[in-house]
Image (cartoon, rainbow, N blue to C red):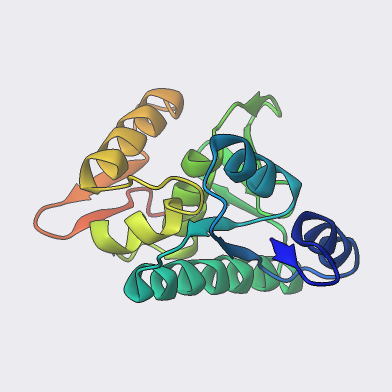
Length: 179
């Protein structure tokens, strides 16, 4: 953040204006104001020193994974229909088949996008923790379970459950049809 020739927040803004690169702030500045500003300005993650290298590696992998999903969505069709729902990966929107948007938090959207992108394969809770942990320091299995519960309440459609629990593994998209 405290660069010898400028401000890290300004540099991050410049990078985001011209690139889709992921940004992880690594700094000694650990006030809530700095952390919030860094995440709101352009950061995907904000890590304070001293750093845990395994934590930093997990966060870097998380950013790369999300960027990879974003690139695949841009190359492929941006919208995927499943059951009574349409997810637009570019606009980050979920629509009912009536065209009405469904309000989702960032973590809910990321988790649902991962499940839809898995083509019915079950995803482990550990993997889903990495998918949704982009801005939350304390993400664990219970967080993933709570997000799935919230999504299940929001995705009430034709009576068929959208997300199924795979015992001992995690979760999968329960709908067999993907258009």
